Image (cartoon, rainbow, N blue to C red):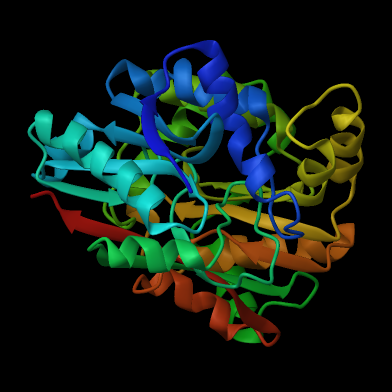
Length: 374
């Protein structure tokens, strides 16, 4: 008979168990992609977003064995921006037992209520950058490295506890080597000429700190109104993200456009898929995990389409046709075969563009749940 109890994560030993629990839970699941433990430690203890977000972590123990985990979070910048009193939950993993799920959720709810919150939603990260959305379709597929994976029973557990759908994100898989539609190519050529647009140099971007800051400012501006629940990044978050990602940009898989004033007009960022490398690394870069990563970064057979966007003044001008055309050409030149899109809200018209491609299928659907705190 199980003897469940909830404990708060306080010590380094607790944190290690909290981070390692999914590795045991998904040990025999071929689709699960483990996160690097070192990245998880940083995300849970020292990431810049914690300068303004509050959070707490708990585990459910069955005797001395971990049976579930959860992190409760409050982002005051989100609540101020949207006029809400919402907490969020993430890092939610549990065995298939409603009592474990109930202990986890009720503890996070009680903490949120103590801090004046009247709703809780998730699974989410502190801000828009991290993993979010509970998988509801596509369990047979391996997710991109920046996306969650979960067993189907997770949805049964949270709905049994009173959660309802807030929104869905969808992801598509398409042939990366197929040409863009002729109409889109024709539009792209006309726009390049009309607006005097030029392709920026990715290698130059890596060494131009001012341009990197401008890139992230455009990112903030371009997604501020277009992305559901978007939270603009602080200067500290921009600096942290730039340090982690800009050096990894591959000019074969990325592009950005400059207008005649040398301002960033639009951008498209993709990465080689590292999901299978993460599976082989099993949460650690050492002693041999780094070898799998180096191999993965050279292999562009499958790529993850991370972000595509345009500066506000270039939105609704058709400029997306330009970077879609450029990136499609680059994918064919480097030998990419398959592309997995980043999650997009299923009601966002930007997600409809993928259906215009001939060889395209729904790959995954993930859901954010919400519940009133009583």
